[in-house]
Length: 430
Image (cartoon, rainbow, N blue to C red; front, side, top):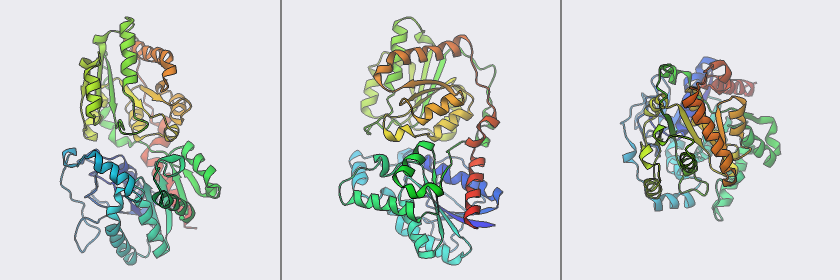
């Protein structure tokens, strides 16, 4: 079997979305004649807490937080919650602006130590896969492939310097640009999670076109088998569910008040019944947003769940009949297709999208008939009111349901994506 070292700061039991990409590659690559080893740490910092039930038994995990002679050991961990995470705004801003390439740099010394030892002892491991963010994963992988002459596969799940995700002062901005260009040049293959992102990077670095590939994020069928829809599910209310981060400190936050204000307007015009609206939000809520919600006329219709585990979110999905999906209004969001998109897709309910007009997510929503598309700009307020009213009427009055057909979404499954990566690794071995 071909062998690959997967490097990811985030990995289960972390609930961070970043933990899922590497986990599912490790879960399925062996089915395509690829033997995986995962370099990670169970002492990572996860903004969404810890304790998911993703089964890591049987995986070859090199946990740098364990002081054991046998590096590939059983992955034990203590179950934690988001309460264990320090949430200091001042420290977060300081880390964002001063740590290169990001806060994951604290892991680099251990990762290099364990990674180097592993590669010395396993000369038949010819490939190294890295995924970012955290861009520290890239730096670790680049150093290791340079020292040990391996082939590097770099996976971009978000923009780095290109499209301005990172905007820092000199000399850190120069270091960021240098790391990004180094990854472009040194990588034998580059992966991107959307066509938009792939195109943007190919335009900036024309020399990567022959080695760049699209592998979407996705969902794992096994996570949704037990969430088959109950055909007798009550439709007395429009039960809206939102899960994710609001990025309230960002210049391009996820604005939950656009929908709330639309519902307020439709209620005012007697087009929908306030008593038939229920909204659950699973997200960290800042004090400012909380106060705004309390002052809103729909505050009694809203249940704030805070940060919940992924398994709990999947159960909430089963109890909802409309998923609420929001992007920010930025260049990055034009190509963003979050993991949540695919989890919603697999859960059989229609989705209400709030996206920048022309975003790639809008195209996928329309192509696969996933629900309803509203736009972020205020000039689309009247249009958005009609879209939300249509969703209300079809779900509550007409009892609309989506028919889940796995064959329609095959390229969005984790198994298919592992097969794509396996083909890339196989091609690189020739």
